[in-house]
Length: 454
Image (cartoon, rainbow, N blue to C red; front, side, top):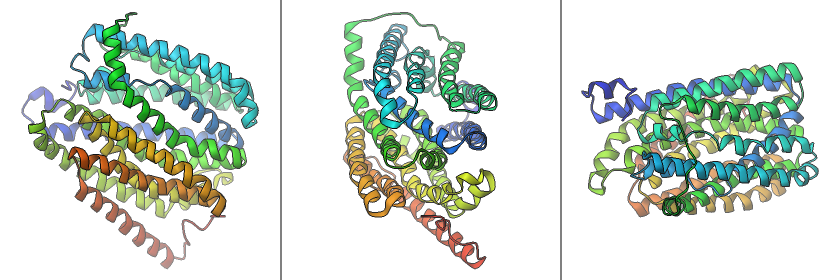
């Protein structure tokens, strides 16, 4: 268990208090992490042109897609499998991870000459970004051991340290270069920093090892993880890839600013789900599952209610926030952020619920839900753009998150795991907060957060 938590040291705290401490640590370090990313977002927006950020929106979307090719869920395997702490199992998993990273770098390098002309981006940017899968694949599996052992404090402090180092490097490059090469080089260095620092964790050493039986076990469990990862990636990045073809790169850069902010709560929910809910329930016997769910449920309720209400509050004043913080060139990000945060309410709930499916050993349902999400976005995004232009496309992206919640809910019904009442109350609270603040803005003659839509 998490030896970094005081409740675990004394042994006197109840399981619910232990989960509360883990949620608090995850929330606290994530807030610091989000602050770094938000700060970097602001600095880059002031130092670099919107078109430069638009280039990186496309490059990052393609990089993530290539990195998710052949994903066999190394982390999920280590967390879920009884032998996940075994040195031999970890070495085999690390070897597969490294081989996969090298292979994906090769694919990326081969695709770069085609990607550059397709998006009107310097091919050398793609060639540089192609190094990241191999570098990232070299990190130690000690990171995943922290998740399995529910060492929430140490895992989150590790990630925060990596992000702080990457922040310093990327800001320094932006101040020095003032061009697209600053975020491009910073991207690769950030991956390298995380891989290097992973070897400072306990028991981080790795050695080359392959064993057919274990490889097949990893691949067998990971086959649905691979489908889920690809579907999740495609659904999360199809907007960037599609819009990169139909709107100017400058507008895509503005959209990228809003999208980065809107993804913060969704990422937090994913971290809560996969670092706490998933490992806490993965080894629980079916008969003990109701008690385990009840212990987590109280903490989950506080989290989803506060986050969803907060999302609604920010959505109601998104345009004011953007104008106060960002360069005037990015003012249009205000209404975009307001719309995306509406969808983020359901994305937060979906991410938490997806971890329940994985903890039940049913990644199949999560995979199907993500494939349905991808299909929904593939239909609604071009339809929204055709009917309503760029605003119609943004609305389609938010609507897809509501559909995704429904798809995940079907899987939860099948495995008899759910938090229906919590989710319904969270959505209701979000709608109420947004309506009240919208009425207040109207009374104060502050207009609408969607006023800049065009």
